[in-house]
Length: 371
Length: 129
Image (cartoon, rainbow over all chains, first blue to last red; front, side, top):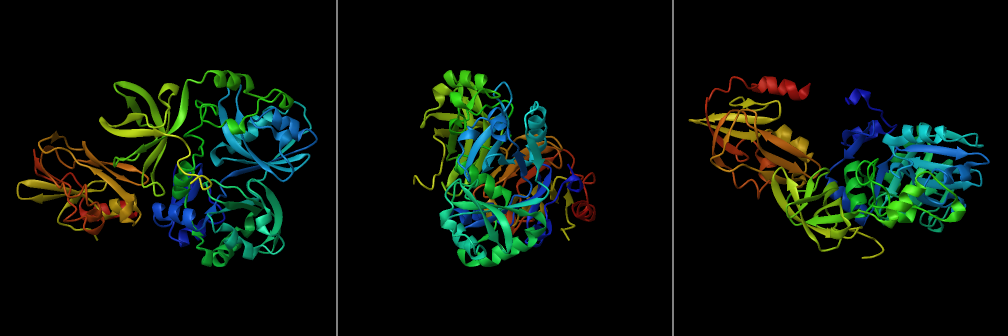
């Protein structure tokens, strides 16, 4: 896809002015890095970083049947999400394979705000729309009218609080959200969520305000170390934190059970039947493979598609890989047969005929609460 | 302006005649694309064994940065007679001096003509278009 066919967020000019290298991502032109990817990742682990996530899909599902409808479509138990809380879930087909993974925000008894991946937004919209079957549900695409920014890192609260006068951010718990006045904009959705394994916030507000809020945040957060971070570091951070990326760890051929996402799947009777439930229940009884971490002391970085061998046997392939500034080695994620999915197991990665030793390890590689 | 004492490939390798040999490296543009100006972002350079015979256009090695792997393509066919083994341990040399100290391999060519490659003006036009 050429640059001309790509969509741009309202912050495109700000990224270019800040020296960002822009790359195609999910149909959008997005900043992959402003400076060094490794330095950007470190900044988020140690201080705080600002991300433009204007490419993400944002939908609203509302109506009398909104909750029960979503409970018939997604893996998590939407009816049990407390008001102003957020849960992770997946939208699967009847075979239990994901069309996307989602964040579900319980805005009200008849209103759920859904965050989807940029590249899957249209699929999510049409899949949900095709399954309404007369339920009292309205599905609205809010992506174009809303900006989405994230502050991620231990100093995120310190960076954001100066622009939030009517809410003590320490009162917003992990995976919870509130509406607050941010940079003078009322009713900004502020959630304590993210995709880096660090404490932080995601903000949703009218898109036209994005350039002003971006600039004001960078000024207000300067002393806390706030600087813009690209998608390159975001990918490294989420991999270190063991978070899946659609198209890598999960896709039409990689189900959430074998991906280790059972925390986002509810088989409770009260949830009722849902798309993919039977298929995933069967897989849960007898999984054949498991998503694991791999670490390597070798110089080559694991990359998606590299084949993995145990002796002469091909046993799997790499899903994602990165140079990990937090661990100081090269890391990756991969599916391997259950029998090999033990931490400490040695396997080999093939890079065009050359083998490099890797050690299987448990995910996540990094947890801020379990150091 | 890039040096005009050598020729270039679309894929950002350079080739320079040195006596009977062709010296091959990659351009500053290639290094910048791979590392985005951060020499620490280059992580690996895989060079071939001396004695290997390669054809024009064949991949003779790989260079890897934090985010991507790129092939290294041979500007001429021939036998690889020397490699810059310092590079694998000192990737920063590619950022600091891609034109001289950052050379990668020397080829004893089947035909030492470089006429089929881009001159510096054509290469310049390619990367600025």
